[in-house]
Image (cartoon, rainbow, N blue to C red; front, side, top):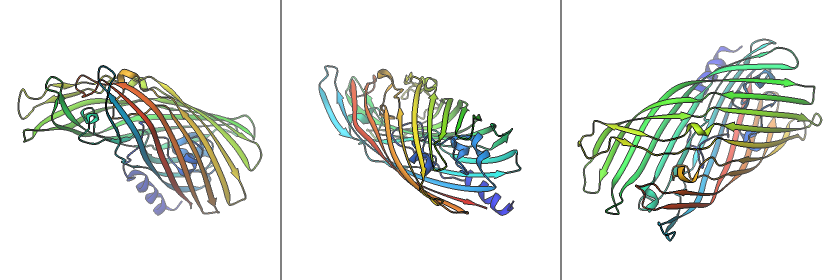
Length: 414
């Protein structure tokens, strides 16, 4: 093993840039090959990104490998707002605020039975922005969740059929929320607010693969839920001028999930993957923020509560990979992601309906390096949700929403 390359790999994984995701909360874009196959990439050969997609499959990596991936996501969408009588009172679009999902991975084969891997990639992230003078801004005009998970992983190959892995997860969350405070009696904005904070928390994951024969394999991955106790700074800028500050505290629980996958090799050139993911979004039951120590006592409420009551849901994906030659391959994928947002729990932080993602990609590889590119189109669909008591509308309709996706990965063997 080259110790310099090992140090470089660890540094690349641990110092990966923070992510800004787009049009959604859950992120699945962890490599260009994964994007190309719709996220159905649990059984790839010699791919360091297996740390993210399926830790038990790092046993398919030979030697020592490093990989970096950069995925660009650009969300677009429109909305209409209605009053209590159902009359349209505003129509608009989101401010296009593109984001990057960045992944860094390192895998080393220790011996014929043991592997070590580490990755830094986003599991949950989002960013959304709307015009600051719009009625939608009374719910949210800028929302961002930066997230990155660092996952040191140990994998063991028991025999030709069984392999398994277990790993820790060090999860970082940076949250920023901005909105206009709306007075429902006076029917006017009274000032803009900003809540900003960050947190680190621990989780874990486990995975197992079983090969029936040379052509058929199944796998399962479990990722634990992670609870963040978020300490934040709260600021309010009243329309009358000045600034009000307070300490803020909230609890954010990122859901646990199950991945179940199946891999079939038609021959040495072509294989098909199927993947189903169950995410327990029901852990996102509320976004409650407690305020303390306001600089102007009596002006700020002690609690800012918002019920969410999301529902647990499924994501289904299918991916196809075909080797044109020893050096070139093409990939394609499709994914269907259920919306977990109920009518009473929707907002302009995550105005996301069900998602259909169509993707294609290509890969070049030689003995030392691999380069892959992918393009995707995510049809986000529509979402209807109710306004809250402090919103300047009674109901909202998000539509014509889509996300453009482009990704590139580079891997090197040592």
